[in-house]
Amino acid sequence: MKYRINSACDGSVLYWIRSIIPPYFQNVFKAPEKSNQLQYVLSAMEDATKFLSKAVHVEGKDLCDLYAQEVENTVKQCIMIPTSNDIDDELRFQVVKDVGLHKERNPFEEGVRRLKVFTKLKPLVFYNRMFDIKSYVEHHLDQMFYDECAVTQHKWKGFEEMKNLA
Image (cartoon, rainbow, N blue to C red; front, side):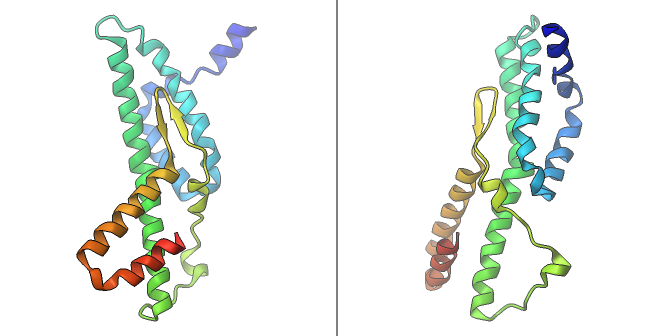
């Protein structure tokens, strides 16, 4: 019975169809209510490290590390970077809107993005790596605030307000 359950729940097949993973992550980003599924998908993808670690033609640890790096890059490109960029854009819009220099947006036409869902997720774990979306967004915003204030010192009040909103 244990063998049947383990073989039915084996997600190592995802290694061989890795091309579907980026579109899946992009779909999750577009529909944040599915974000709770990310850890389960990563856990299923991690099943492939069992057979990768047993490779004889190459060090198994090297293959697992390459696979983990590929998954990390995919999570960053499809979830973490778009989340931080969209939060940055939304903060900029809110500050400019308060100053009165930008036209109003209609949430019924454009929709309202629920990006907070991603920052509320617990850190995602895959193999020997951890992806903390909240920390990534915080680091991105801190770096952006510092860079922008260093370059355009006369706009520091706007950036301070953006930081307070974040």
